Length: 456
Image (tube, rainbow, N blue to C red; front, top):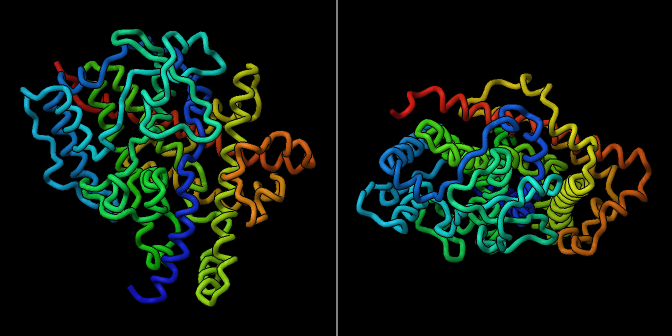
């Protein structure tokens, strides 16, 4: 790599490190999924499914699952750009005499997941309808996640017993938040306690920040352009497509073999990555900046003036935080009050679902991420106009560090109405995209399940 390429890589990687330190795109995904799916008959009218421990599925379908993980790996090698192949030693060689611990370990290794992925039986309570989703004893966050809850976390968990009927909506919505519970943490060789899964060094983000290590699985900079890709090839190493393909094909297998709970659960897991890539700050390296601006920031940094480069990272980080805080808090408040706002209506709006192509194995990249990347500049501009200036225009202010002391709703009420409306309209547009892609993903999984013969 030439010196000028290394220089550009420095500023781009610094930017991604800032972005990836808050690699949660939408806060609590369950809030989004409950609203996007609650009025859709395909989910709302589906019969409840009995909860099934993961090992029961693995024990019953082990050989088929092992074969599927090999097929998934072959697909990834053929279809994912800059993919790092799975080492042969991680391949699942089915052993009928294996115990539960060995089966779970083999499954996680074959998928290249964190060995701490819990796959617990749980439901995240819907704050709008707790009476429908709180039928079980409270469950501590550490029972479902290997990472501590983020600041201001809104999740509330209850345990589910094996065989207990669970509404399909609750299975999907709960699982759609699950990949943020540590499943993609510490998988790279330069992460503390990581390595051994063949992913190599972390391509972007700060490998010293634990939560940052999931960024290459939850972000996808697929549409930056040829110049960007040439100068910063590491940014092409996204594994979001891998996770969507793994979980959608596992869901299809589960549906075909009579394991409806895991069919819906794996579908929900896939939804997480689809929803992440509807967020412009996860589909663009820096939606508010053009490539020349990033280059200039790096030039100034090399000349001894680092403020522009540092400010670029902080401002993009702050705007992402503001967007996430704004929509999460509004969705939660509306759910608790039983109210509908523009956000809820946008999430439920099915009229745009058919405007997109039918689900296919490149839908995440070619449809979801492309749309979010295109929406990046307008979204960033709306946040700059709509949010208090200190939060989005002052590079000396770190929103993430101060978030616990900020009441964004109260601050927004002091803004001019036109400013608030500009930001709300931008958020509602993004949520309409998210709702449509959520439903289209479910449609795609069901079609995939129906496209192959069912087990006898």
